[in-house]
Amino acid sequence: MLRALFVFLACALSGALVPVAAADIVAFQRGVLIQGTIQPGDYAKLIAFVRHPDNYGRFARTVFLDSPGGDLVEAVKIAHLLEKSHAATHVVREARCYSACFILWMSGVSRNVSAGATLGVHRINVKVGGETMDPASERFASIARRVENYMAALGTPRTILDKMNATPAADMFVISQRWLVEQQLLTAVSYRLGFMDAAQAQCGPEPYAAAIKGKEPLSDEEAQDWTSRIRGWMGCADELRARNQKADVLTIAALIDGADAGR
Image (cartoon, rainbow, N blue to C red; front, top):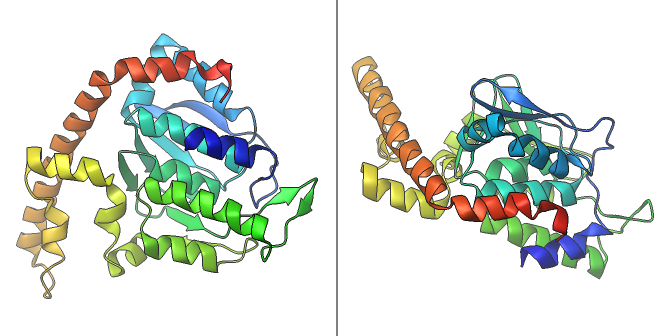
């Protein structure tokens, strides 16, 4: 399915935002930062970065994101690598992850968005020969369905997909942490569905989902206890993610080594 999506999109799609500079891929904290507009060639740049012995450990821990979006085909290629690598994705404080970048964020096994950071989605923009395709055309609808199906396979909630489809390509629906909490989507987007099941089997029930079931606000003591429990649960879940990553090291290596073979 993914290979077919690459072929289908390669000659038709570009990000809704006009690229002005390729993304920077650099070491950041204990992980890797992808920052700037995503452009063709950024997947190869990421592969070259990850191949360096000192950088794979960073990539294995966390991929930080700060991007307004960009080329959708390139974003899907990078998302595939992140997805298969059991990577964790994180939008840092004061950063944004919009448009095609949102696909990268959703490709993480565990996903975080810091306070003060924002996510954003809008309807895809399809261009053929530099001309924007008519959103009412059957071809546009077919492309949009394929992109939506891929995003749904990553675990994107229906509510967010609906917001994406309802937002014109020239606009942006900004997803704040507060909105995710109000929509009771924070848990759904924080971990991949299958991984959440495995993590709860290993680490016990996810504390946040239990906390929001109560109608009354938490007392200071309850909030402190919840904070402690969620930190412990997240630590346990991250250990499980790292074990899965190590167990699938041959698959990850094949993706990296075969990056130049084409898709």
